Image 1 (tube, rainbow, N blue to C red):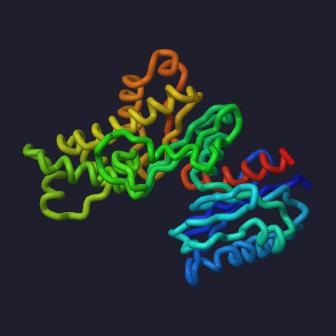
Image 2: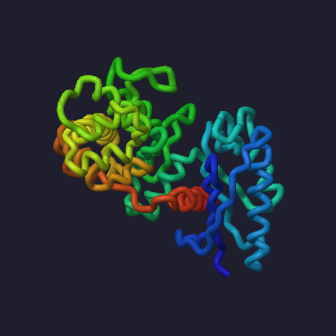
Image 3: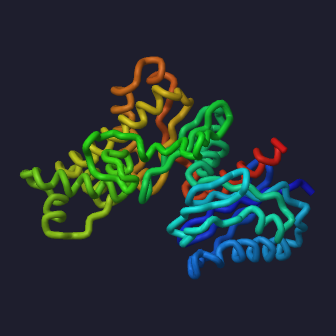
Length: 323
């Protein structure tokens, strides 16, 4: 039997699993709830129990697997296989994830930051088309990123490579949770888009249903703002233009620095699709020099929720190939 891979996408509410072929084809997938009670002490035992249960359920053996890969929030030490500071999992203390999972399953295990892992997924089976130079930016509650250069996932000296959410796009702008001002995350994450709209609405005086909704104290989401803009609400269009300006500036700088074959935009905000991408593209072209402008493509992610498990499997495959 051909060997298989297991990919795990560990999130604050759900843990997604998949069994894949070494060619990246998903054969089985399932998920369990993330139990973050008691400092997240149930998470790793739950993962182990779920893997062992499924392997037995499908009549497989542990030696049928090349390895297990996992994407996780928090700061990851890849060599030691530990995670610390994943606050949405209640993991405040260092977690020895690799040791526990390898001991209980007998399968080699590797983990990395969730945005890096999603980048690997999009590069391998999504919009990156398996090119060796791909940058992935995820626009969710925050803004994450992953950089693959010449086939290698970049980590940097302290594991912070690819933190595109903390590129400064608006000096002196909104304060970020990192303590700095004007980070991309403060204006292009789901919460950032709303912040930009509320800030701009103070000075906007024209007719606008979006402006009215904000003034009436309604709960407005980034999805609502893009929907107003797509319906040609004049203020909605102004807000989206501002957000895309900041995104285009960051993406342009990434293009000028790395010249990847593609910069892939994913995450919840990217659900706005071509309406978002085309506007980012226009600013990208304004902020890049010709050789980059003509060779680097701005694309939308293709894998959606499966990027994490596919990327995690890719991580396991790459890691085992290097051993």
